[in-house]
Image 1 (cartoon, rainbow, N blue to C red):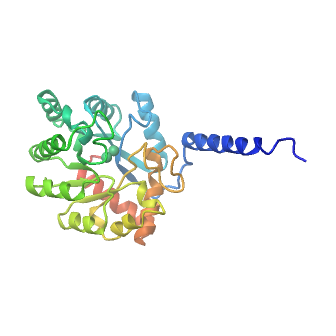
Image 2: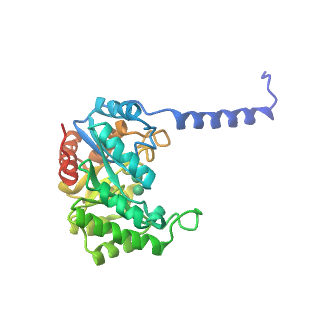
Length: 299
Ligand SMILES: [Zn+2]
Ligand SMILES: [Zn+2]
């Protein structure tokens, strides 16, 4: 006979479920088996716990131990952009991308424009990003740029990428058609990277047709991502990249747990499986593509 009354039992169970979920959110995934040298094409080192040279070194040492030799750390706002440039100078394995994220597009005043442009003169800053369009957040968050502000800032970043001759890294959330139209109207820079690609086969085909690189994050490994997986199958080898977008989008089966650049080999394996290709071969060409697209001078 149990000591607990029936009324207490579900309560205790619910508590332990909550506790388990909480623990899961804090527990980092185990180290993956390496698949060969990789580059994390898009991460946010500051949001992953990077603060100073020592903490950045720790994250990058962990990544390097499983074959992730370099990362591109991406800024969302001006404070983040200054930090990303610093991080890229602290450690040779970190490169920076700077821009105002579409949700911060209203912060793009003359001073911000001048500063971003000056940052892009730095050889450690390898891309203009992330910029683009985000139709999810307006109306949900108080401090989000409006659509006209986003369109104006996006056009400015496109022009900037062309002027400085560096790749344009695109953030796209629920804005497929408008985003492709703005790029067409403004004229695409030579290298365009669709970060955390989330479109269907039609959007992927249009990007491929235009020669854009499609970068896949942990989302491609989710069992529910059948549309995205179909899109991932039609991208030719030379236009494929992989990224963590850490600390978000941890791949299956670690969804919901903290993400960092060292987790990238899981996504490489998942994407290789989706495409029916040996993971070591996929690792080789996505790494070559990242080096070529960003012009990395890997040591
Ligand atoms: Zn993004
Ligand atoms: Zn991001």
